[in-house]
Length: 209
Ligand SMILES: Cc1cc2nc3c(=O)[nH]c(=O)nc-3n(C[C@H](O)[C@H](O)[C@H](O)COP(=O)(O)O)c2cc1C
Image (cartoon, rainbow, N blue to C red):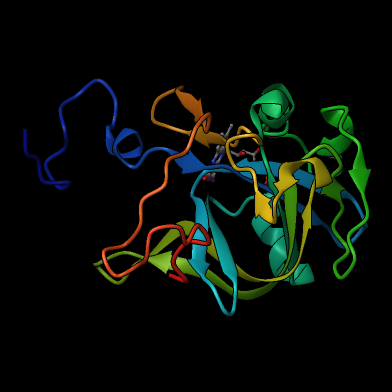
């Protein structure tokens, strides 16, 4: 099939998110001006750059995570793993800003080193970030949308010690959770290695980009 966005897909549900799958879940923690901690999942999320290391998430509407990241200039990305599925889902509830989703989901939190938001204690890894861009997106017609993108530079990374083996982060062991389309999820259970044509076999560190 082929369709123009202007004419619609004619399907029962929009296939867009199912095609762009799997998407890692950015489990974003922030803190508001009153010191209330906030935690919410964002699957419009990903790596943007390395050296400097940058990651970003985007929000459909001006949600608490964006508002807090914009005002405080900080956010933390917590890795969501399959064993944290229900806690992650609980933190997606549209609750009032004064509700701390760590408490709502019965999650333990730990302080960060360089930023004020707390991090999920059980998460396989967390990244402390400082905001470098916070933008209201515009469409091809030049009109502003109600979509907001936040990009942060990673200042520090926490990795659970049990997930480091021989100097490598065990991605499959961490069972990273990812979002597909509709109500579908997946988790990384196994990985395979592929070398670039120019690389010698046996270099398992991976390409720099
Ligand atoms: C797995 C998952 C992924 C989500 N991804 C997004 C997303 O990319 N953008 C968005 O605006 N909302 C997303 N949501 C919904 C938000 O998590 C939800 O609106 C939440 O209440 C926002 O919280 P906040 O206002 O504290 O930031 C997602 C929900 C789930 C369960």
